[in-house]
Figure 1: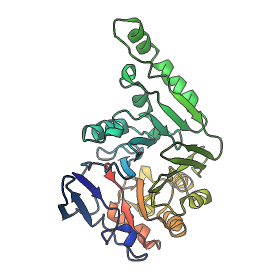
Figure 2: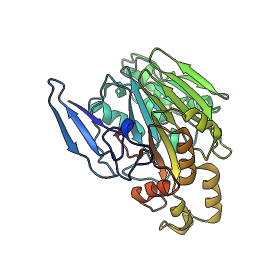
Figure 3: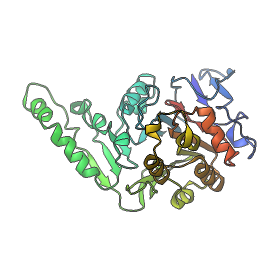
Figure 4: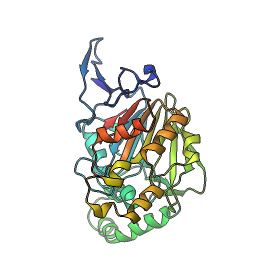
Length: 340
């Protein structure tokens, strides 16, 4: 059975959604197609916040799975930031925040075979909430991994990788010198540090990394071009011209956001919203008005909010902030295990 969550707002298909007629709800329909026949059933989907039940991935199409949509503020329903782009039966990961590696395990157990042994990862930047599960990717069953992990990211990624190897030196020694029949040395990852604009290409995808504006942190967004789709992931950034340039013509734009209403006077504890923290968030992250500005210029097929800093507001309220800022195109506030 193939189940496809259509990334639109009021219409069935985002490609047919008229610009300016977007609503504030999640995709209005889900199509369930029985692969063995021509029978098709249409059911109404739930409102804005989806259940965390992964739907099987159609191997004939490029699919995007939002493994984790969270932030440094821990939430049992939203693990650390991580996105999987699956095309041609291969998964390409962007970031691995805390809890995200377990999401790949859950996805594999639910039938997404490409996430059984993922080994390609692109890091937007090296803040802990985007890299903590890199260790899990490298060290979980490393003695059975056939293909080494290949990692791309900003300067400092090699030092991070070397540090993890040093931290697990005793694990390596015990397993390789003892009775355990170690088959591979899967911890030996291949690391590529980005310096400016970056491009990677194989037979399935072309990936362009481009600098974004995350306060003083070296940070990158990524544009994935496959045979049937273009996906752009902002990473952490405030408004940035390079993001606008690379997001033009994207079928799907995943963009981080903070709630201006919540940061300014939301229900969160005031200690999270002191003037110095407000100054930082506005320098490092994107307000709803900035997200609307990017999307109105780049005009993606669907805009997906992720890495949402709510500061106490709801998904519905956050979507309304983007709408109020002038964006009327297809819009979703992403949740873990959403499939696009």
